Image (cartoon, rainbow over all chains, first blue to last red):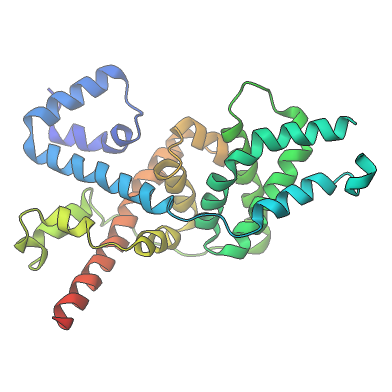
Length: 83
Length: 193
């Protein structure tokens, strides 16, 4: 079984789904048996989820999509020339 | 005639990722105007190079890579961020431990859960934007866009090991900033009560 220190070293890889299946199995075996680590790792996962939630809460500025579409459609010349 | 077909195909493929690109640009640059400029420049470059995109490969990663390049170029031209932060003293699980060690938060059954409830949307966003550039770019791509380390390495053009270390160090620093906000919020509530 991996130690708490070994688990800590893999914290970010675990949160970011970068571990191999075997490493995940070892990690989860540890988390099943170590309440302290389980609590801390759960916290880190919740914090990552919170950052994602807050980071996706804003919409686009008005007109940005239109500005980009206009720029793309006119980059090769005025729109009427393409027709 | 070619042009019309191409721009339609480009729009259909690339425009659905506008929101993700914009919110990343917003965090990367820290303000609305630079974010808009960066996204517009990214789309113009992506359009210009669209013939190089391999259909069937990951368009989202391709667009982010273009934005990563564009950002690096603008950033090199415009500014130099000389900010040095010391990370050595920030231990893993910083925020969790602070909550448990704190007199006010330790009154709660789960101090660490109480801390997570203190943050306003803007606290988290401002904390992200306060991170030094190299950490900010990587943490945003990992936490918000959930790219793999390999994808982030491709977008930022650096080795995977560098991505890994920037993410872990960036997250620690983020926790340090967040703790400052949590204390402030908690202090404000105490003094107004």
